Amino acid sequence: MPQKAKYSEEDYQSLYQDLAGASDSNEANEIFVIHAEKLKTNHTALKNGYVAKARWNRRKGDSTYLKQYETLFPGKVDTLATQLGQFSKNQIIEWITEFVNYPLPNMDYIKSSLEGGQNDKFFLGVLATFIMKDIEKYDELWHDHRDRIHGTLDAKATSVIITSLLIPFSIACMVFINMSNAYAGFGLVFVNILIASVGLIPLYTYKEVSDSFKSASIEEQGLIDRTNKQIYDKYPKELLDQVWNTTNLHQTQLDEDDKDNIELAKRVFQGEVDFRENGLMDFAISEMIADGWYASKFSEHFIWKMPYETSKIYRYFYNKTKCNFVDVEHIKQIT
Image 1 (cartoon, helix red, strand yellow):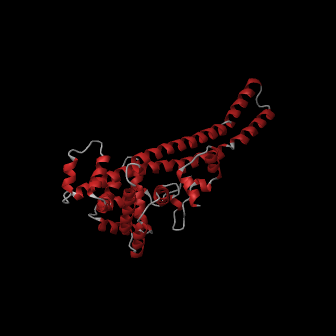
Image 2: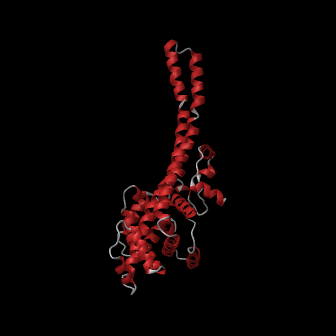
Image 3: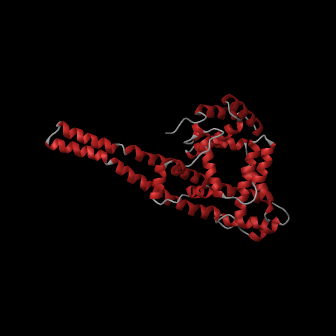
């Protein structure tokens, strides 16, 4: 059963109201520190919780928290744009023309105008915007999918165990009623049929859960195909690696005060990236911090685990329906 989140709705609302008076990221950080002291936590954890809450609200249609945060802490697109200068100008223009729905006019002129360094920042910004909008869209689609396979399916699998208690209960009721002579004739038949139908609920639940696992597996394959088409096959791998490394290093520099941790981040966030593991960790961190199923259990020593790792009934349905979730198969490799 879901537990109380680490921070309350009132905590977030109070923080949102105070942040409305901040003019830049420095003032916003001071507000996070003040609120963190009141809540007896550190400001980085509170900031991460606020971002998780903002994203959660946006999935429900309310973008006010996220717009406020991105106004105070800008730079995701801007920071990425500054890092794209390592690619040739003509290469950047060719990528842009591939990503727009309509061809840009007079491409020879546009390319020649770049030779002298004109409009460099504009085109870098355009490319960065294309990338970030697509990635953020599919990040949210994958987060919703992970909510289903790690949260909803886990709850449904557990419901099979709970409803199975109806079988011995129904048998006991039928034995008692038939021995008590409380009903006779058609009345006895009707009561027995009614109790038997209650005993069939676990069978219906079992089938419904099996179908849910199967449909989730089919939906994931469809999401993989869409992600490959719109992200991995659309953008070069070196661009995607640059997005991941740049945005995460930028966020670390905003959140961290420890210079050693920042230097460590500079070494970690470079080179090629395994996006399967990172996507799973992003979901796990969001679950732990503020709004997820495991929010109340979050601590410095708590490590989030998938229901596949912790629930026998979940593993049973996963194997029985021959699912092949990316997260589960990847965690097997890590293990």
